[in-house]
Image 1 (tube, one colour):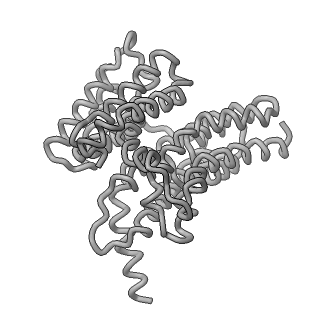
Image 2 (image 1 turned 45 degrees about the vertical axis):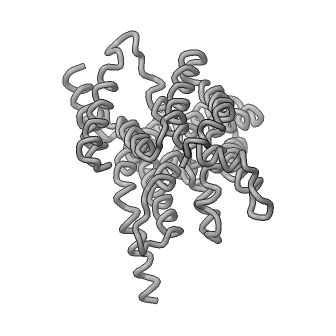
Length: 237
Length: 108
């Protein structure tokens, strides 16, 4: 029993520092989301339940306008699949890492948001730390931050007033750093440039609201086209 | 919208999201070997995804008007410089964010 406890504690202690920037980002965005729902006329139950069962920030914001429009289940489903399609890529990348983790796998896949995926894919897990519990704590902490932020925002509504303008940049900064960490591991940087280039070109061509699907298609085509040279240099590692 | 319709809308959002998260694991379960091309994608995608996510964070920045995306570019520059210098994730993220907050609150 004591041994078990030590195992949880070690995994939690290893996971927590990686989630600190997400605490800042999720509380800020979660509060903003809860406040947005509050001023749109919904009780705090809505942001609380939605952040718990959907756990995907951008879709939850869009869902507010869906809830305010006439009932359109098919359109809701199509919007959801389009906004969330990038998770297919995360799943493919995590196939091996999440293998053989038993029941934990179910929760890990359920809670695989952008941030949890990014940390669990890149974070080095220290020796002696249980891999499965490390992943679980990263995912769980992130979800706790998000749900508590959204619920508080829904409760407190517009009462909160402090100058947090610009705090949302914490998410951008985190993805830049994760990008750099991945960059260090590569010998050629072709895949990184493919991602940046395809996204930038599609953002220009398709606009801010509908460039993710074309970007994913471009990435797939380019990775298929450059498979031979990439595998020859040993990238991706 | 009635309460039932709201519940259905939220359920569709949740189930659609889960479909995109679970599908790869359901298709490529341990029973059959994962096709080599999918294995290759699993290794090649992350670098491309992280590039895509960086652009995604900047999707609403207007580089042609307003502050021309300067606060974002400067703060990203600071983040990268800090990370190259010290290599500590939290320091780089905090430094870049504080820099951005100061820029948008005081300078732009």
